[in-house]
Image (cartoon, rainbow, N blue to C red; front, side, top):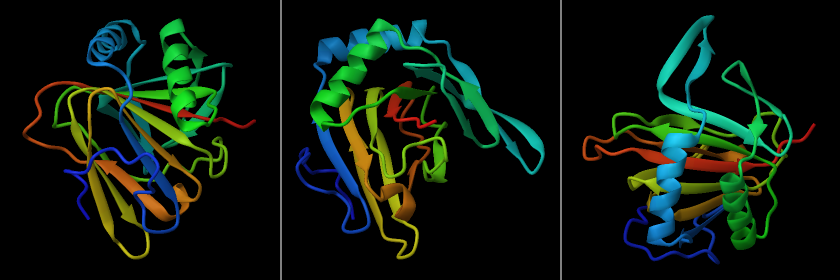
Length: 202
């Protein structure tokens, strides 16, 4: 199923079963999006992401940063990160996501993809540190990129393009039953910054 030409349908569930995904479209103005993009690109404490796979330590080209309302620990790919304190700009973006989604968040994993060569393979955000069936709000700044979902059993796929300044929210049983990815592409040569606001439970 391809949603490339669809208008934002935040009151409609994009998934046919076993989860909820709502796309709000552009929730931040073009001028504010440009300002946030510049701030995030230059002021966030970016680091190459790390993973330990079959005992081997891997560094990715994609860069990440981890922030929170408290110094939360978050473990994925066998690496534990310690949250930096939210900046005023990140708190403003968190408030924006909470206002539109009606959910609350206490942490944010930021991703910097330098160009279309960098992406993310199929995965679910089901780590034990995260609130079970909690909402994950995804804000996009910079390059527009295709984003895809795949059902773990039926293998049905759903795709859409995430626009600059747009908001996507995944919640309920989505992470249990669906994988998602950011596929690489040769047609994008500009950076994309993605903020994923989450809820950590102790």
